Length: 209
Image 1 (cartoon, rainbow, N blue to C red):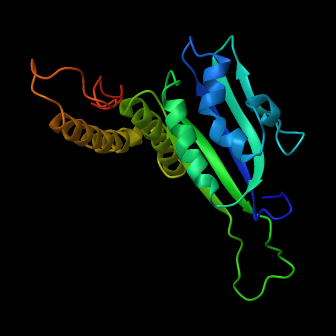
Image 2: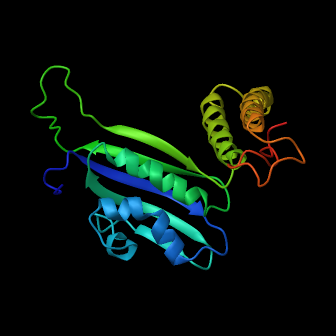
Image 3: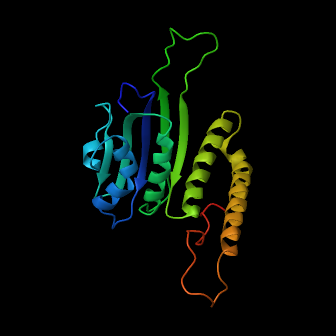
């Protein structure tokens, strides 16, 4: 698909902390869904964004940080690339992280719009992490931040402890259900050969009591 034919400009934004041992080659493989979609032959070829003022795709080997501020032309099929990218980054991430993806409708013209016609702009929030608990931790922190920011217009921060506790309770219930569902598929202790797949075990997110 040429840039001219692409109905969307897609902006990918976020910072993902990576494990200390992650190599550039591993990162290139994890991000292959992005750079191959852009028609590039490697991550280096696609690292620059469509806009010069955006940093693009950057990997800081000293801080082990992947930074994304990258725009590409495409269609809604880009969502499949995002799913594959998240699976690749899950294996490399040190902690949970959020990635924002915005779809901007390039075919919509305010001046030519008729009636109640609206742009097909869309927004997706993705989460990656080494375990479900790490991912839920990021989801919890973002939700608390949003709720507290909204409610502080009407209440003092000290009055919101109960609200935060209820949010923690909801995430604790979700985490416990996830662990229970994964435990069902595990062989009895002492039996079988090899471990169960997935990242279901481990400690709870630290704020979920």
